[in-house]
Amino acid sequence: MTTDTAVLTPAARRILATASELFYHRGIGAVGVDLIAAESGVTKKTIYDRFGSKENLIVAYLRERDTRWRAVVERHVAAAGGPREAVVAVFDALEEWTRTAGERGCALINARAELATPEHPVRALAAEEKQWLLARFTALLEAAGAADPEGDAVELLLLHEGAIVMHDVGEVPSAITRAREAARRLIDRA
Amino acid sequence: MTTDTAVLTPAARRILATASELFYHRGIGAVGVDLIAAESGVTKKTIYDRFGSKENLIVAYLRERDTRWRAVVERHVAAAGGPREAVVAVFDALEEWTRTAGERGCALINARAELATPEHPVRALAAEEKQWLLARFTALLEAAGAADPEGDAVELLLLHEGAIVMHDVGEVPSAITRAREAARRLIDRA
DNA sequence: ACGCGGGTAGACAGATCGGTATACCTACCC
DNA sequence: GGGTAGGTATACCGATCTGTCTACCCGCGT
Image 1 (cartoon, rainbow over the protein chains, first blue to last red):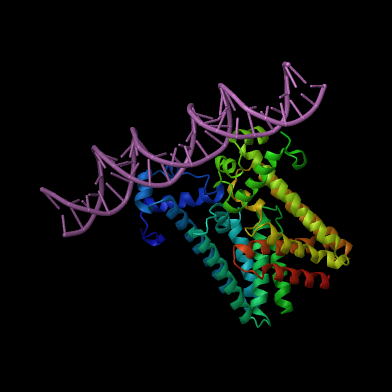
Image 2 (cartoon, each protein chain N blue to C red):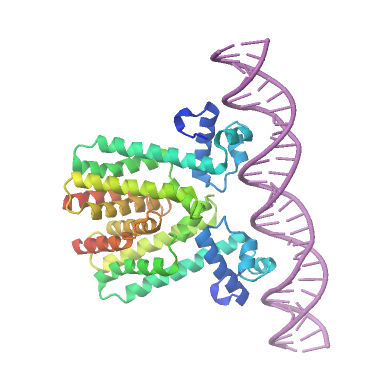
């Protein structure tokens, strides 16, 4: 059951794309396999032939989204003018990401809210992604010559996650801009 | 169908307490009405006699939790030594709250992740709570003589929401402490 | 010529879900 | 002493959900 996005069948790609949209915007529990089949113009049997179970499809959905998100971050970081700008660039990535990939918060955190059993694979996925971003912030801060990279990285991560939540849930559209400004102040003080 | 916590029947109080625990720790969709009935030693009929529907029970659960949370905030703010300390006290409230009320993030945001339909009442509840906290931060910052209360309030809210997310989901136990320190720095600079 | 991978079409199983109905019990109040 | 509020116990309904199964089709490589 390889769900690597590269080796997917055309039908499997349509299934994953459709499931991604539906899961993200309506919630995982609210979307049945029959609906995914109908919306992607595919039989239920094909879904189970390609992905094996709904849980596998959920994991594939979250993995694929995460991969795209990290690529957006790296693109903005690489295009930054210098080490300090690279730190702020993560918040530019967030702005682009919410604008293009949907305004309903972090898919991993939303999935975690629904699938709360400790053994469920989404817990590991979510933890891994946040740890990655924390490590990424730490490395960028080190490159920028910050005095306390680890501590400041946590603070940037708090601003980042808070911005995702408040932008949609709290109906504070300025959240991301404000987080960016706060990050700018932080990097200037360090 | 009055679900004001004061006028609740003994059985209704047990139902609400049990539902609160189960909804919060396992997720709303993962908890059936039959389970709530069994765990609280009550018949399903009693649940529907008192609350009318599962949705009403969900709303009652979120309302009651929100009321307790706001009380914790106000208690810490009132006990603070001065206007600047009052701002920081909100983060002390958060520390106590996560320690005593459970470590699975914000119940309102988790509920919102599951119940994504735009008309669902939890959306209004979540939005209202975040707006309340934003207004509370703004007022506290004004009392502390901040130069830009509205802008700084947003930043504090980002730190706050980010801390809730990272404390549990991101497995960063220092998140709340770090948010408190960042708030202290913000109030000292303003 | 043949097999096989990837598909469609559609029925079906088994379980669970929210919600309702009927019958009966008990404490309390007027 | 009768009505009412708040319960218990239990069976049940209709819908929905994940997952399986059989039968058939088509294009492609060997």
